[in-house]
Amino acid sequence: MDFKEILEKRYATKLFDGRKIPKEKLDELFKMILLSPSSYNLQPWKIKVVEDKKIKEELFAASYNQEQIRTCSHLLVFCAELDIEKNISLLEKELSKKLPEQKAKAYVQMLKEFSASMSEEQKKNWAQKQVYIAMQTTLLAAKYLGFDSCPMEGFEPEKYSKILKLPPNLIPTVVVPIGYAADKPKPKIRFSKEEVFF
Ligand SMILES: Cc1cc2nc3c(=O)[nH]c(=O)nc-3n(C[C@H](O)[C@H](O)[C@H](O)COP(=O)(O)O)c2cc1C
Image 1 (tube, helix red, strand yellow):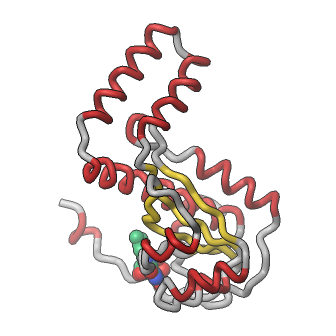
Image 2: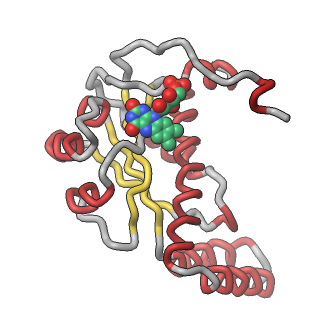
């Protein structure tokens, strides 16, 4: 499938057939998601992968009973990481392998100042924006690898946190069920070029 076809054929799947995505394909997907860009390369996301049927049933009830949640093969819960300091340390380790020491130090110092300049609310807003970039990679990569997906904001984050026992530094932001579609795509409805570009 070429890139244009992926864009045309991907659609928000409302029902999956319950078949499991093979592990090798999942690993390929995860590697592709890791290539997502992020501001300062801080990658402020953690993605909880849910396969367990019972947990998916619980999350279904916390997602306005949307069938994608319990019929998918795997549910990816994209969480914003609020512990930016932890990510700065992680990045510092990676940078030190690839950059001269002084350069890495200067970059890390700049990141620390960036993090310190934000309130908790600003950190959350910033991290949540980054999460959507990884989400979009997921939707396109899934289609490329031969399966389907649905981006979803229709869920109750507090209930997800409880069910998945998430620590307070992780904020469920958007979820993406993946699997094999059991529904059919509808014709695409999009605004015209003239409406959007000016
Ligand atoms: C951030 C985001 C949240 C969405 N949340 C839901 C959702 O909770 N349930 C759902 O069925 N579709 C959801 N959608 C899917 C959109 O309705 C869908 O992408 C849009 O109608 C365009 O259709 P298409 O993706 O099939 O081209 C969401 C899409 C995005 C990007």
